[in-house]
Each structure stands twice: as C-alpha cells, then as structure tokens.
Image (cartoon, rainbow, N blue to C red; front, side, top):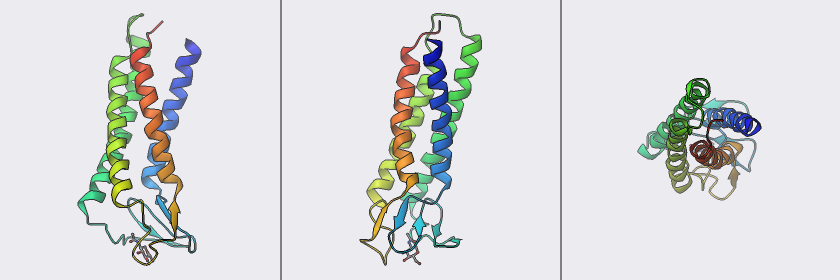
Length: 161
Ligand SMILES: *[C@@H]1O[C@H](CO)[C@@H](O)[C@H](O)[C@H]1NC(C)=O
C-alpha cells in the first residue's frame, strides 16, 4: 500500500516535470533537414530560436498553449492536494479531490494535444511539407496524457490506510 502510494507519487512528480518540459521545449515537430524544430512558442533552427512561427497568431495555437499551461497547473495542484490529504485526511477515505483534479489535468492535455495533432502535428512548415517527424515534446505530451489518466483513476480508487 505504502509502496503503491510512493510509486504514484513519483510518477505524479515525473508527469508534472514532463508536462512542463514538453510545453516549454520547442520540439513538437522536427524537420528532417538540419536540426530545425517548431514547438508551441518558437521556430528553431540549428543555432537559435526565432520568434516567428508562421501560425503564431492563430487561435488554435493559442488554445493549445492555454490548455497545456492549464494542465501543468492542475497537475501541480493535484500533487499538492495529494500531499495535503496524505497528512490530514482520515484513514479509509479516498483521495477523491486529488483524483478529480488530476482528471481535469488529463482533460486539458486531451484537448491541447488533440488540437495540436489535428492542426499542426502533420507539417513542419510551408517549405518542408513532407520532411518532418514528431519531436520528443509531442511524444512526452502523449505519455503525460496516459499517465495523468492512470494517476487520476488510481487516486479515486485508492483508500488511505
Ligand atoms: C520555420 O522556419 C522554416 C525556415 O525558415 C520555415 O520553412 C518554416 O515554414 C517555419 N515553420 C513554421 C511553422 O513557422
């Protein structure tokens, strides 16, 4: 029981870190030509990141940014609530509040990554339509999608011993 809780705690911290990293790292789609990549904020070439994403002003991108930031916030809140409940909650209760908050985080990742996949994940930019692959940020985001769901459900199911 304690081992399980400790395991979830570690995976939860990892999920918060991965969400943070994948949101700020501009490596969602990588060009096969050179080391260039694009993310949620910038278009990066070999040596530097310029500000100019060709679709920077589109509402869809701003929505993805907003939902990824929300997902970081909710996963962090859920972690704090879990620690708080660990010390204050009566034995036998479920970690309902942290579970519910983590599932909200899961929904945010779901919306953000779905919109990104639909609109942006399938091209690097105008000049390189076919020469791209998904970067580690994009993969991390989908891993977080799975982890946040599993963590959320486990919190709802587990009782404090
Ligand atoms: C990123 O920069 C490259 C090179 O300037 C350009 O071809 C590409 O269209 C840009 N991608 C985006 C999404 O702005």
